[in-house]
Image (tube, rainbow, N blue to C red):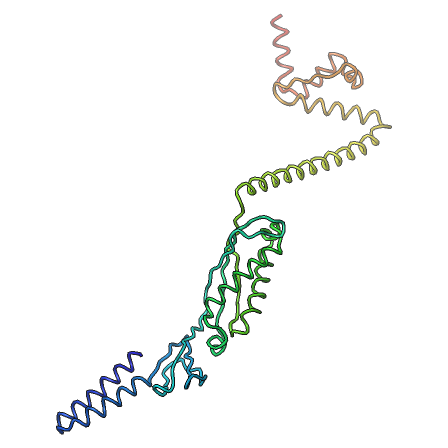
Length: 295
């Protein structure tokens, strides 16, 4: 029953009533009212996004719509209205064990649509519920064949596998699965803590490996530098003096140098140390003169 059929019934019955008042013959109102009732029952209308499944005496007759169509009252019946828009179905798998026996709760969303309205009406009783149950059982099956690490790190692959398996199940019903998306994977809190500690330990291990690699490279560079200094005492002395100079440049820096190293660099005399200090500490010479004057 639709608004157009009701309006059509009222118009035809009204014409019959007017004709009866004019002529005084009740045949008009009876005939036209009966005709209006038949037309109202025969007129059907399907929206743009749906199709009507018409059976004639219990057997499939046609798929009608969208728009207005007509059936034979009593003989024909519209048993189902099939929505062909993209449908969204959410489904879950609670406390399902993964391949490595970890209990997880998984939430997912399925996007699907009806391509063949005839199959959706005749091949399965309730195609919406059937799609939901097929998606849920498939999700449980795939979780049982997947490691937890794979599920957390590679959801896209699992989404594609889910879509492929569910689509193979729903294809005989005239239903096409467009995509499947896993929304969330929940694991027990104690396992979350263990995984967090494991990840932290892994990061520390990588940091130590990087530090060890850097130390190895530095040692190799020092080894190569020592080969350049071994036969060149003057270069070694200049390098030692440069190291001492860099240390004395900092204000308030105190550098402790072994006496053997001082003798090697030729800094054992007061004049040598003074010369090095004048080079590294600004104002050293003027400060020294002021002190001497005071004595």
